[in-house]
Length: 219
Ligand SMILES: Cc1cc2nc3c(=O)[nH]c(=O)nc-3n(C[C@H](O)[C@H](O)[C@H](O)COP(=O)(O)OP(=O)(O)OC[C@H]3O[C@@H](n4cnc5c(N)ncnc54)[C@H](O)[C@@H]3O)c2cc1C
Image (cartoon, rainbow, N blue to C red):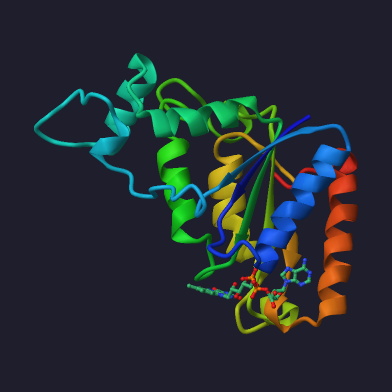
């Protein structure tokens, strides 16, 4: 299996980074191929704009999706974007590994999605969405750390239901482009846990990863 991990944490010694390394080691040691896009390490530019394209179809009025479609048809994406797109095409399993920032992914990861899940490449312009999506043979999974404790992410918790918070990412991004979404792995209150609890969660993540083949698909 080809595994592509997209990782967004500015600190290599962070717990989120340890989870990324856990998945990397787990899959490599079990005979799979792994590629990691460590977005901060790459200094990935998250801003989608005219620089995404080698040439524009319209110089007067810039419409991002129109240019994405044009670039998809005419091989006009910048090299930086093409490299990430190739990784995506190669992958059987795509893991988004990140700390929850403002109920979402860090901006650097959102920008990666804006630029790489381009119209014409991953959806639209003749390509379907959701169950008809272009990436329907791929699996997608989220690995998330949070600041808040698990109790805060229940239906009646102060942050609200975690499934609703992750819906825009899991459904609106991964499933939108067709991926079969796997149950996510969450470490709640990562910074509040003690050393033993954190190590236990790392083992639980390895167990989670070992069950991927038999997991039910969420969407
Ligand atoms: C802009 C912003 C917005 C945010 N918005 C939200 C929000 O909406 N909701 C929310 O709940 N939280 C939010 N947070 C908090 C954030 O989600 C948490 O701080 C983050 O998820 C904690 O994970 P971490 O990897 O950064 O933890 P870290 O602080 O890096 O890790 C915790 C501890 O684990 C230790 N550690 C590292 N590796 C290992 C290992 N292998 N084994 C054991 N221990 C290890 C580290 O040394 C550290 O002491 C926000 C934070 C920011 C900066």
